[in-house]
Length: 341
Image 1 (cartoon, rainbow, N blue to C red):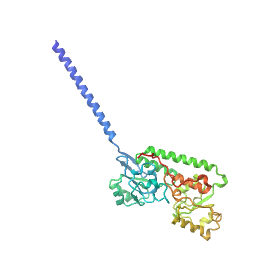
Image 2 (cartoon, rainbow, N blue to C red):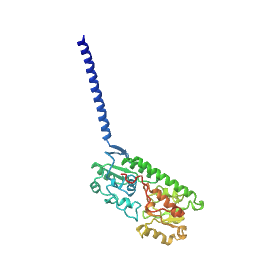
Image 3 (tube, helix red, strand yellow):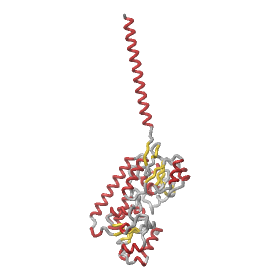
Image 4 (spheres, rainbow, N blue to C red):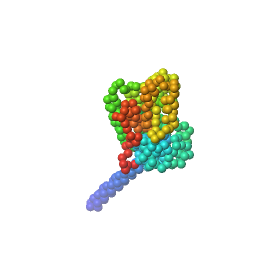
């Protein structure tokens, strides 16, 4: 009898032992699965052309093909996460991010070759949608992730680019931070514009740009005028961005102000181009020329297509309404805290 009881309890203990082993193994397997997921840092984003871009981890060697996207990235990450930067961004005459740009030793021209780009060993390349498709395809054939962004036509497009790039580099919270700073700056400008006497607002302004086809409806300057409560003369005359405005059209429009983008510290091709208009005998009867309403906004702000476009809005208001809108040439919206990467 005693022997049977011992056998019975022995079997029970053996079953319990097996259950403990099974339970332990199950727990171990679960922990292994969690660890594997924790180690998986890959993610994907869909770019402006609908292409799914796969990233193995947060990129540490970012390259972009335009000044605008360089500025966006510099607002999202420490410079050490950029493998190169546009060669013009460490020039104080034309850059508002000189101190950041100088921390990146490698400088590249606008739209570098596929070979030059690959030599930088980037883990993410960000390009505007005007880059030839064959160049984008060639980089992807080298298994380099390429993110295509839409060329901004206004604040709405800039916001979309900031959000997309922030997702691609694994910093979506910083992207939201930048958008919040942009919104706050626009509100600040709008509140100041609201205090400008109504008789000073809604004046016709025409941008005289060395890029002759720039400045009509559907561009960032058009949006800057709207926020500053000015009238974009080229758009009023029926010119879309990409269309040049003839001098005959200019005289017929009779703008109140001419915007002549400038660079501090001396003359430039842009300044020389603007002066040709100012001195042209056929334009002397225009109100802007006759009354010397010749505005010289800083070119870096007025052409801006990054989060810093908001300072282009303020620059527009400054040359139209005065010192209440004055700002330094080093304004840059960033979500990167000191010491972060």
